[in-house]
Length: 432
Ligand code: UGA
Image 1 (tube, rainbow, N blue to C red):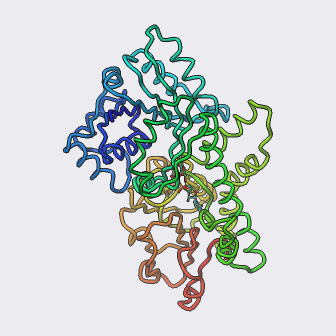
Image 2 (image 1 turned 120 degrees about the vertical axis):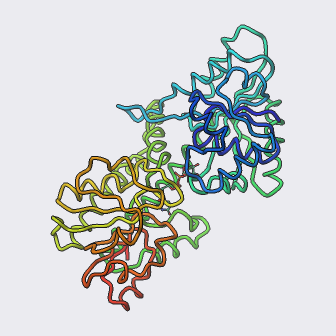
Image 3 (image 1 turned 90 degrees about the vertical axis):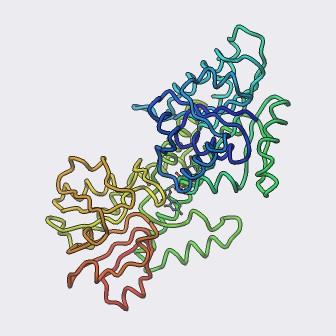
């Protein structure tokens, strides 16, 4: 099939590349000419394990193309995916749909034959209806269908999530589009993915409800972890104990520094905003957002307690600063709040991240990036494991820190408290 992906951000680039890998002819377009030129040379603007290799292979085999000529690319395609960003508006919880509607207008102006227009961007319920209204103002008689097909890719795992999805959700109003999309996804369905056909509005809401539910699950276990710390219970026993109940499920029950990234924080807020538009209260989602926003305060207090209420001039090292492992993404990372909290109290911060130094900390006093773990850890008073990268899972702390007395705060529960005790290491973790 001839596919055009509008937007070469995370969703467009990963999905477009994977559609090419499945044998389709894909053109990824973007208004950013620099980005397109780099992609033509095989240079990937995002950090996603395995993506570069797939882009290069599919480009060389002639199935994957890049262009900044959006009009012609739309004209040459049968299916057009809208994959542009939907950031939160500055002064509200609303998703900003300016880029989505601009894409819809461009499609309208280049509708030279029947096309299926698919929104992959995360868009509030009724956006599909609005896109349809924009297309209905076209001058020619060419037909089209507007379909919602949300993505469920996790950063760092995106290729695997695309090729082996739990489910594919397609929300549509026209019969023709249903047949074509089913056939587009048939290679994944034959490998075992569930394929759910539903209404367009339902598909749009499934995406928000999924992210809202997963964010709630994480927040729930984080609050239970707070309680565990008070009553001397291990949170992992609770996660396993409740996760064995199939109605609950074991995934997304890892207690930690709170959820971050480009999706959960943005989508939970947008879900609230949609509910408000329809006069509906979502008190659980509201509490989840509040609880997650406050998590950095609880963690900073704990750090203070670990250091006996003395944060001034304490050498604190962060291992990992991104919101999770497998990505260079800093958006809404808990470290963005915890590090400034500590700096304000006079601590001296060093950090190491496998994806390099971060602009977000430029200009923040007493915050130094170290290009290797050794330099970052040497002489630290407190070592904070903030992100769960594999390279942090087998460290010899005594050798690294080279100091008699030091403390470890493992925000991802990577190490065994029992082993740490045996090794006489002053070790703290989350909910244990
Ligand atoms: C999330 C969803 O998992 C994807 O299904 C969805 O497609 C994507 O948002 C999106 O809307 O585009 P992502 O933001 O890449 O994917 O990251 P996750 O792996 O879901 O993690 C989100 C946050 O929750 C991270 O901060 C992570 O550290 C945290 N988390 C996750 C926990 O604290 N505990 C867990 O058990 C799981």
